[in-house]
Image 1 (tube, rainbow, N blue to C red):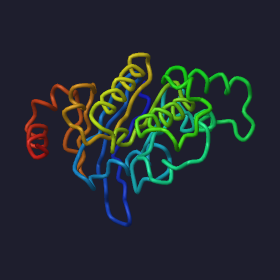
Image 2: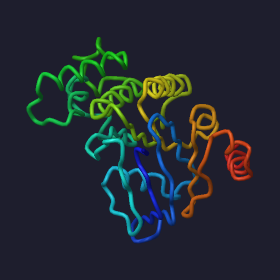
Image 3: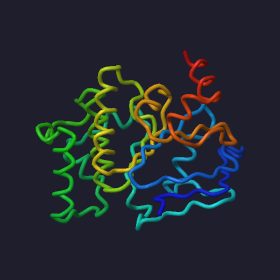
Length: 229
């Protein structure tokens, strides 16, 4: 059964149609990249999958026992987030669902996520004193605290240099290989084709949904990549 199944989905942003007649599914263990020009509805779709935006029409169904509250989310980073005055451990723990009092099981989960992302030694460091790449790893660990099934990532490498971006992509791919399903919005089409299993290309009406290899060889994919060179 699909983790997420969208059927005939129509979404609006600021009163204008952003996504129309969208039907696609996310399977357990998939690595789906959502691509498209600015304003094509990518972030709007992510918000709808999180339950933060109500569809104008169509349906979003969750399967395989997945609940909306069990989805990890890494949003686009804002200046306010970069200056957040808390320790690394506190930021990661805040991703757990039980608040404000965290049971021992959730504290163990936070410690596991810190270890998995190579952040244990930075647990007591101030988040705002970290580099941009370290901050993104902290936020990814925070998102991972909320889920063992599905991560939604909205432009996770924006503003990072190529070396740090490659390291974050490697971490995300490792999580996918361990069984976490990945849905990621990305402007890096080359990386999407290289790493993702499935591509969803949006431009109001969806232009492509299918395997990454087929997208790379399609006229839509080639035209989009040539336009970004």
